[in-house]
Image 1 (cartoon, rainbow, N blue to C red):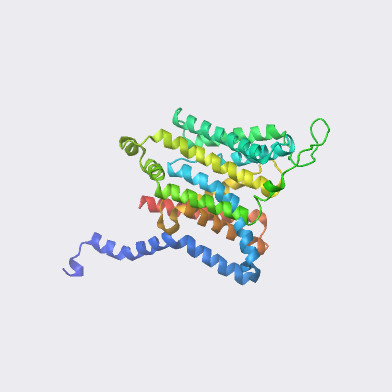
Image 2: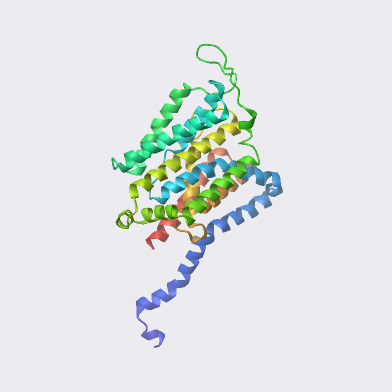
Length: 337
């Protein structure tokens, strides 16, 4: 059959195929290529960018974001969306430092107290979403404000630190143990991030529970008809999301050795961006821990390079938001296609 005899729709498909192949290539490898381009540009602008000390600084700076974003990724796997992770990080940050400074507790009690509080939040989120049928985004948005208020009430709007002035006019006598302070230092903070990413990757990719979460996220009704306990896995997803947010808050407390007002809030935007950028890494097309880590690396490189180029801090959110918008455009355009 000659080309003139081929129906017009078929000819159009043949002509468009290369462009879609090119789109698929950028969808799979665009994030990696962007990272490479940014490294080349920033290294050319400032050779110090590629020094080992700066690379370690980038990994350290993305550790907390990655840990929190991994929890968010798990909630996305069941087609949820946990907007309360930043507030949970703030709450766990305040609790763990207060246990040391106000109550002179040992590290085990302090850490367990912070984790327990976060798991209660995760359970409340899950029960309201599963039992009361409140949409995930709306429920976690409401919980975000509630936890922010609780954290500020607990700290009385003050920064918690050693030797702080207490409401009765006396000084706090508790101290933060040296052991706890090492968690937020290199290399421990980077190793902890790597372990959590590896754990989440193995859990979501190679265990039946992780695969069940993906099935639920793809089609909840089909999952239910297949015998999967949908509600149980949604509850587990929100508990894990809160757990990793709490770990991020604890690591933040160890790194800065204080508990500041809304300390975890800035990590929400970066965590969301990292998780959604991760959708397209290597063509995954779904939430995944490895992709989330790569997304965090992209954000870390972008932020570090802009600082080294003396870009004003108030312009960084514009660029990070633009990167997130591009990632969302690629993800949802691909899903529609």
